[in-house]
Structure formats: C-alpha cells, structure tokens
Image (cartoon, rainbow, N blue to C red):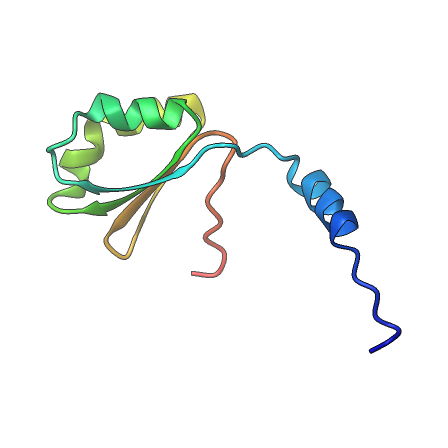
Length: 98
C-alpha cells in the first residue's frame, strides 16, 4: 500500500474538467398529482433544477401543461418506474443501463 498515492484535489480538478462544472441546480422531489401549478414545475426547470416526480394519476394529462415548454427549452423528460424525471438543458438523462 505504500506505493499508492491518492491526490483528492487533483482528482477533483479532473472531475470538474470532465463535467464542465455545468450543473449547479438542485434535485427537487415531488408528487405530480395535479395539486401543484404546472408553472411552478416549469419555473424550477428554468432555474436549472432537476425534478423527480412521483406520478399519481394519468402521466400524459398531468405533464401536458409543462412538457412541451421543457422540451422547447432543451430539457428532457423520462418516465421511469412511476417517476417522471425532468431535467434542464445542461443535465441529460442517461438511459443506457435500462
């Protein structure tokens, strides 16, 4: 083990280079059930946040008011195991492992 040299500050700088340090929002957990005004969800995305919404009802009906504006902004929407994941343009959704 003496030959092992871990430089965390060096690793952090490489990570920032790889990611571009672009994502600076929050992950917001919520329930998509029609109780929250769709403009609030859109405003959260416009502010750079990621939404992870538990879908309680008809997904198409509940997401319709804000889905097109999110896509028009360059964001992404993915339905996965009862959740709708919505990201702003600078945070993609990788579904390769599904």
